[in-house]
Length: 252
Ligand SMILES: [Zn+2]
Figure 1: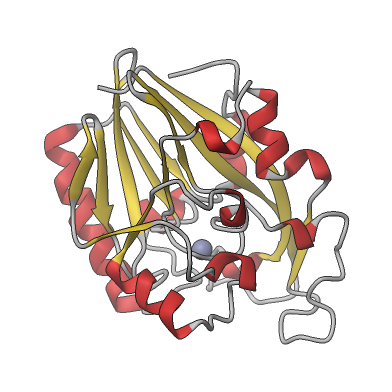
Figure 2: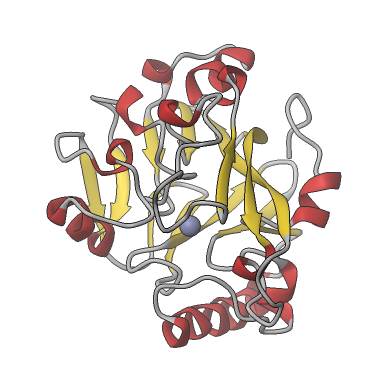
């Protein structure tokens, strides 16, 4: 069982709204929240995702001259970097007993260079992307080959109360996380299996690597959750849900 689960904001991205809902015509920019999560266990703290890379700090022009120019704009300050985010809660990166990467996109694995020795849990299919060393959505910081990866495949429970659920589709080796805490019981963190509630509940199509696979993952998890009835289902980049989410020092 997990002692405490904290929501930690880690900056924002300005993104074309159509990435969240492909039924909307492109051209409308929205500001989406970036999250990392801290899980306090008896053995020490565990971090879920590491936010955006240092190269995004005060650098809204990062994607200038690339295919993403004008479609993705980092809105990141020094305070939003994982080292600062952890410092605010009294930790440094080396205190973490483990890091979970839901996947290796720019807003989920950007702080990985600060965890050179920490076991980093990723799915096999994401590891294959690391080995290839190229991904359009991952700056180099997200694909470092020499970190201390722990490769998993499928659903697994590496720590009591922390289940990794294989949910490919948004990325080839995406994983969602089911956390069971003392205070709140089961909490599903979909991460980018579904950017928003409407992706999950209404099937609104969003930015995916393989849309059919993404739909299958959502359907599988929905079915699994019928038996679990989580108290909270939290989506990766839902603007409305994120705006009212209670963050550190509130815990769940
Ligand atoms: Zn992503």
